[in-house]
Image (cartoon, rainbow over all chains, first blue to last red; front, side):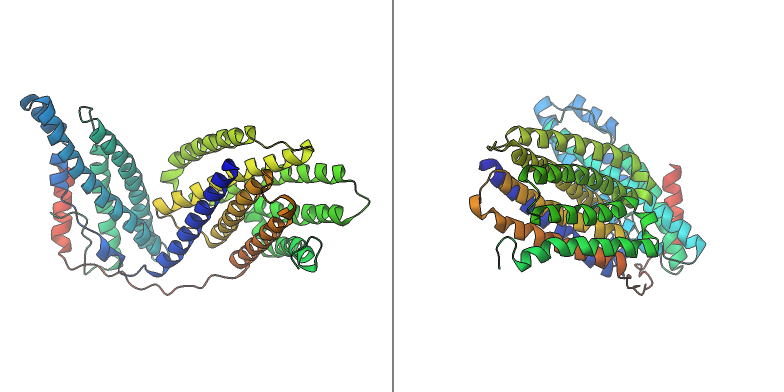
Length: 179
Length: 254
């Protein structure tokens, strides 16, 4: 009896999620224009400082362990905020790249494919990085590296810029705040 | 009206089978069977197998044991084909996204293992009845539904997380399977525990009506052509491209 009820609830939840995602997909397909405007630029340099292992080592040496853990957690939360923005930007760029794939211009097509591939890799890396950041928040003394996210973000910036330039040469795309 | 062997009951059992046969025929004519061979096989099997089981149910000359054995075998083969279809739509989804291929395979294998383990655990808690074949059939149906529902849910969540765009036909197949799998899971869960007792035929109406809707979903997504949306130029924020480019190159070279 209990098992049956649990399974019925699970089935109802699964159905609700599937229908919601299906409807969201249909709505997103109609909202493609102006997607670039939703990109939030990131200060890569500030993020690079935040994830610099040398800074962590310095803080570890200088601060007593309890204080180090507090500071490290603060830094990790800030890191997570950056990575979440990067993940959102990557998601927007997947959609933008997908939209541009219909272009008849082979240069735009190549650039769009590059944006989609880079954005997907970034999205994958941000997912993994977030998992590691949250793990590190729970266990602040552990080592952590989010360097791959930064590297991928820079690569994606280049690809998105190229696509933007090909689609509309008069105005560029901003993924990084300092650029 | 909501009685076994009423007109509605006959319609809800036969109509999806006939519609699937028509769908298979139209898929063949449009060459879709080459793109979705597993789903094409599924449509043919469901049409033929569903009608066979129906005829065995309404025929008075077929003993109950024979009917349940046939239904058990039908479920077994149907379950196998359904997993092939899930693999097929997953392949279609990932075809345009090679960077995600490795991660997706690892994830779906992991999810599959967890789901099979869960289904096995649930099957171990099966409620035995006096006729073991009926219990086994219900347990099999429930186990297949658990795995299938979980896999399709994973597909939707995965595609949504990475903002992947589905091809219309693959999306329709997956959506239909998702709805069917969820409703089947609820059905088998209730049926396996005999929660509705003598009124369990009411569940049959629910499951048959839901399946009818799923067949119509497949019809719509596979046969109705997609409207081509007018693509507008992407509006980009005001900025200086030259300085953007210069600064980016400087950053990369650091």
